[in-house]
Image (cartoon, rainbow, N blue to C red):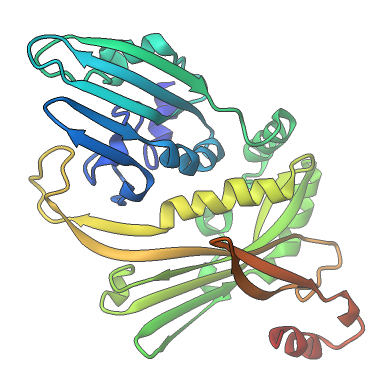
Length: 341
């Protein structure tokens, strides 16, 4: 349990601080502002009410994708003594290692998870702990775990962390009107990983995504805006996994969790624990998934492309168009036609 929580701590520090995301501080390793995902009413010295429902929903996919188990904690806590302050919290997200035991008694034991907010008096608890169901099936999870143990291809960051690939060979870089554009296309690598994936019972997919950021995102271009596009990144998923759910509930939310938002940096090494006062704004970034598709034996990089982007009821809607009717055209002609759509 301890080692699993340590592995999760880059993204989740639930095992040491249940509301680690409340501040931009030591436990918030990403140095990301999560305040848009929760709402608190401070009516001290009487009470504090906090609703973390949005943070819970935002965190489930990334937590489970990283191998953690997500719990929802709701509690009413009243401090004994003359102050009698009440703390009411709804749906605190607790991402813990899969082998960890967590229930109502864990909440009441402040020696384990630090839920006791009463500084000078004992707290009286009423707690409710709910284990969040997995977003993918047990069969899918088992298949992905097998791929992880045998090839590592289940990791969407795989090609960026193995030592025998020079990622720069597949990337271009240019600066236009004060913005640095990096673009990488890994189509040449797809065939190399399809067979190892299929040998483990998986299906190799490719996906494309984009990060756009203000000045400050990349140290090498500190005074320039930045845009990074990855195309045709290989990732191996279990044969029983529902691809739409796996990408749209797991992989893409995982990247958005880590890369999108307002980020800060430490301004003074001698900062106070868990306060935002010693952190200064660094940059703002947005993450946008572009597409995903299975890698076929006869891979045609122009068989599917993003046609347009729209917004319906406040949500982005991407329209995808198939290009199978281009199969008899030359490669140059296919690219020309698809790029104009």
